[in-house]
View 1 (tube, one colour):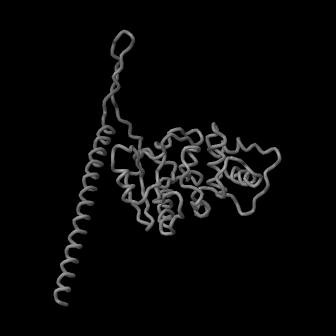
View 2 (view 1 turned 90 degrees about the vertical axis):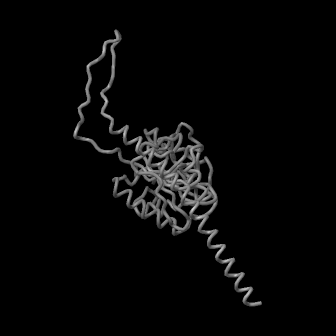
View 3 (view 1 turned 60 degrees about the horizontal axis):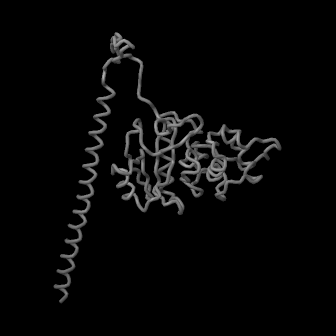
Length: 280
């Protein structure tokens, strides 16, 4: 009886292992196909960049304007100048990867970081991901063209894991060094899309990032705001779009106060805003 039981256990174990290998192979096969699409699309973009066609122009009479292409020797790739941090608002990394490797959602990011700290690089840093959507920061209205998007595996209603934050800090250090990104330009999706997006939310450790040189945060000792302090102008100078002032206030509070999600500035909030605004 024991031998029969042992034999059944071995068979079950082998079957489970084979089933697991098939699932892994199937997953890898799916991502292989995705990588082929990525490579094909990147090759197409490369060919566009290497095109040397002169501008074809005609005047009002239909006469061709003389033109030719002469390549300059002074150029390089566009470089990212901002890092935008998001949470995925999805159930798992595999779900996010499915979303970012499917055409219909029309969304993507450069990096995804799992709760276990694993970093998945999904797009070359010099390429334009579709992560910011309709957004604005300062005078920049096309954040996708000037930023790197990082998605953290988090539903939005839970703490961020320490392994995840540790990996994020290491990645931010590399990006800051590689592209000389200014300290002030590490911001959240909610900052650039107030009223539309809340991520990475009030649980995100912005203060910890600021201590490492990624973004600003208020000091421990806060000087009270003067009586004539113009909060709307301060928000605008930091970078917020104040066309919807209550939304901008809510976005500021999620990032720098992290105590409540409201669109009303208390005296404490004003003091924090004054402290932060002086850093910009």
